[in-house]
Length: 434
Image 1: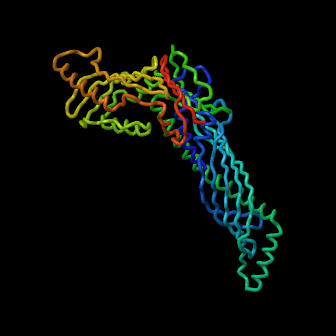
Image 2: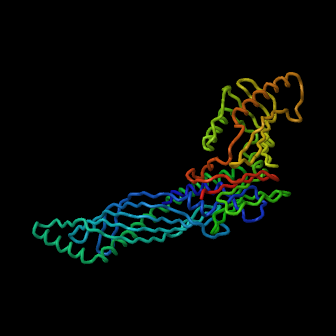
Image 3: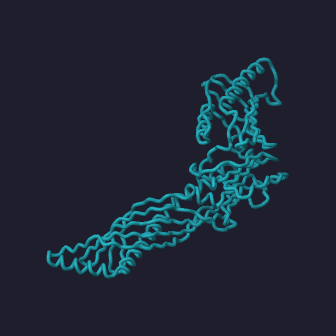
């Protein structure tokens, strides 16, 4: 029942609050409709049944089928979600009453509600509220008595069962409620512990590794959806462009936050070309983009600068990425420091949105000394990198038809309806197909 918690943990790591003016570095929103459409999960579970109630002992197997859905609830300092399981349960069981074994087939209509609270410190679950309305059908009766007494006792038992249908259904309903309550209470501690481990590993630890503390993450929910915010207190930042009304997924990120994260996580590190090529091709597969061409298979690498290893700018519907490399290698050869500049323009088309890549630019850093040997080696590097990056990165990407990035589910049908780069902010909006 709780397996969707792991999806929600990943989802929270990709969203940020957008109801107020921002001093933050990133924000996004997920609508109530998106939660209902994309986060609902099927349930199909078989489990043993063992319940004692009054003078009865009920043993057997239960099969639960249905779906889990989530509804956001108002909260300013955390995300509140009501998780609801609706479906049916079929119990094939035997009830032991003194020397009788009454075999029945019980069918229940189920509704299980439980509140989940997600804060920057972890995940909690409230007590479950369980409703079950069962109908009981007699299959057979066993007594293990001598033949004549067996016939007599079974006949009396059948007559009594058929004479008290309401009492039979009441017993089946009580058994369903007790069994479900015991199962939820048994599974909840282990599931919540696993969910909180994943919450730390997938969200809190990566944020901490980039210098972001838990108190910089602000989560909230309302009747409209769920949201979060990552705060960076940098002066002079312009207000972000407004998100459109009625969107289902909205994301805004400021270039300063990207550059801060890059500084903390990439400074002085080495990027190996083959690993980058594999990573890009996995990304292209998720994005439904054709794989990169790699005609030159020589090993290559970049040692990134210790200051500003990667700098991104969002301005005038253009994304500019500058990579500062202190040293490059191609095969066994070493090459001098150079800067790589990649520019992508965001353009609206008749069908939606696309990005267009300019030809990569590779230049010497402004402080680089010049001599003939260095200039010759830098020229060889420029030719290699320009061609390599042109092969690796598509000239055009149709943003309209991109799949939602993980952890958002690919089954949600819709499209990007707006893309904008302005005043240091990148904005993306996505709409469910209705």
